Length: 111
Length: 115
Image (cartoon, rainbow over all chains, first blue to last red):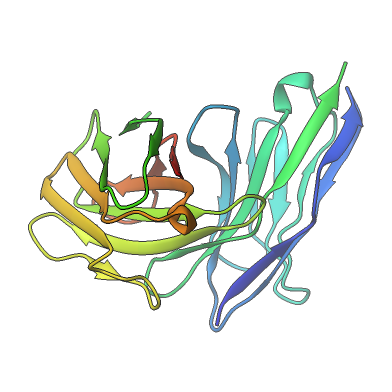
């Protein structure tokens, strides 16, 4: 079945460092891809999405490009802030509109 | 943005008792709500999909008699864990969609501990 694999955390960075969180997927067809973020004590929030190959999703300085050839959707940010500390989930939406999540990656940004 | 709440945020119960978790969409009508379960350091796993006024659709391996889902209105869905056991201890998260299923809005989750 469909699945999502993302890098294990925690990822610890200094403020203003470059961030990459890897995400790869296995799916039949062409799923939509998502990154969700969960701040402490809050629900998951949609960070960005891409619905077809070569689409780039972006929001709040974060970007991810839908790469069909490598089945990847890596999350990047050029300069992280302390406020970006959270858990990040990569997900795909299958043909029946169900979300399938990766295991989540905790990001800790130190001042 | 759309807000989904869950109550309670944390619950501790004795083995054999039943626990009800509420999921509410506060500022929109949710035609579809989803219930997920998350074990520590693991993915969110979809348990069931519920549509207002109809029976929930459970994922393979989820016991429908164990996890009772009721979606009685367009703003409320409940998950009841019946005869809870320690292995049911987990983080339960709901989400709701306003109808086009393009975007799911997530609640903050409920942590259940069964002693």
